[in-house]
Length: 120
Image (cartoon, rainbow, N blue to C red; front, side, top):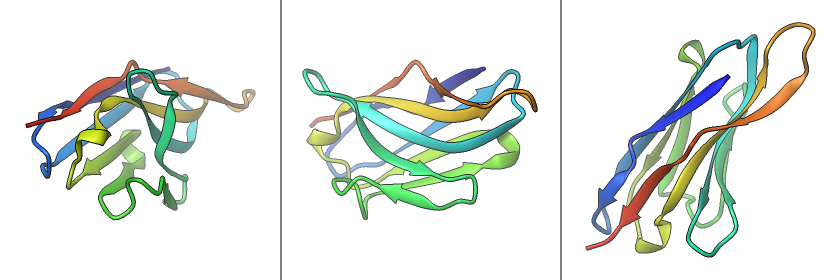
């Protein structure tokens, strides 16, 4: 199973970016999908996650600015980031709970990360 993120880059404060993450490989079903981020010198933190039923949860620091969504048919999760701030600068990682088959339980998978830099 592979998770591949895209959509990161350099943006000015107040700007927007949309991250995408596609899961591929031997996938029977996907439970929750989420986004984490890690800034230099800091621990990785949860940004947002969305359940298989579409229920979303957000870190307080991004509520009202970020929106997580998913396309179940495409095994894809998105993160729309608006009103970006310099403190949002980090490597953003995609995470998914994937079941590879009927005989398997759910396992955590991670993407390689995509850099988001908010700077003027």
